[in-house]
Image 1 (cartoon, rainbow, N blue to C red):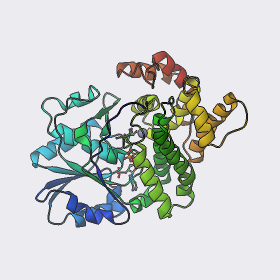
Image 2 (cartoon, rainbow, N blue to C red):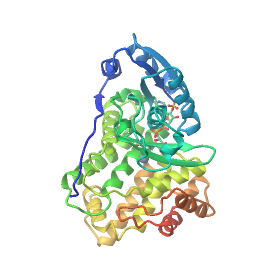
Image 3 (cartoon, rainbow, N blue to C red):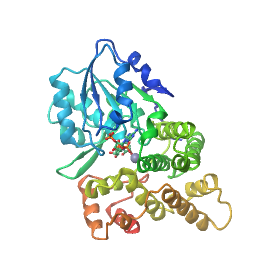
Image 4 (cartoon, rainbow, N blue to C red):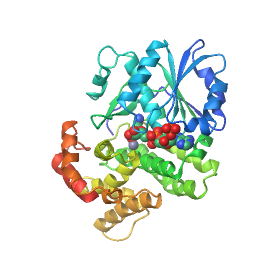
Length: 385
Ligand code: NZQ
Ligand code: ZN
């Protein structure tokens, strides 16, 4: 196992009605800016719960953060936060709202052009406004991590940034908030969480038994509970398990001390930037192709995955690996997320553009061995058609 440091400062409040307890996590006298998306929190009563929990605080609101949050919109949030002397942000929504709030938090205190936060990984951020999160969509893990992905609408660019300054101070996770999700977003959340786990698990063995078994436990839970969230949408325990699995999938725990392969995400981001697909749709398309192209390098872990996650013990090694990749694709399809570019009307003409964008964004040495070059990305994308 590699040496590692593990530090996660986000406090989790989990369960029914935890939103009523958030005031205790916010410094008294704070001037709070509630950030949200297109308004689902008004329809499902979450905003009302938040406002009633924050009685006594000075509260402003900033709505309109889009899925795949845009730099352009977020800069309006920065202007508002600065103009109103906001000193605490509260993100209420899914990954896009939380990611967007991380950007507002960092950009509000940033000296210079805030776009430069997105120009290099581990941007030169020296501080950020403190913020909390009320999660309404189990998917990204953003509620308990220090990463964020922001899009520039005009330039059609989607870029990640990360900084220890943008860990949420706390996250309120009430699974009941997810009952109002449309099935498409429930499915997206399961697929996104699943791929977060595989990207930290399907690499090569380093003797990280704890990380491996945590990862396998999360995958098995997603496989078991994900379809139930579609067929038994009112089941609290199903929603609770999915919510906790998605948070643990990307809060640093299973990735500590083991290699990671984020090529599926990075290639997926280009598909979203160019064609507007949902984040999870891109992952469902790209992951099976990455596993197929990198079969040899990932051989041992794929065999372990085949056996421990899919129960495959019969047949040659090659057959078991191919079956495991097929089961993965079938699971995404079972979750109603299509797994081919052609399912979304995207043809072979897209590939050169996507590969060029990867190069332009510096994504030229992806994967756990840093050997997913533009040539390999092209091969992966060809298998996605
Ligand atoms: O706009 P609102 O009203 O919030 O509606 C949203 C949006 O339309 C809706 N929604 C959320 N909660 C709801 C609800 N509708 C009804 N009831 C509820 N309880 O769902 C739609 C999608 O929301 P969004 O926040 O975009 O989804 P998600 O949580 O999947 O976030 C995706 C974004 O996160 C980034 C992705 O790239 C994408 O931009 N990611 C962030 C990561 C991180 N910070 O660690 C890692 C991920 O890999 C991912 O890249
Ligand atoms: Zn993701």
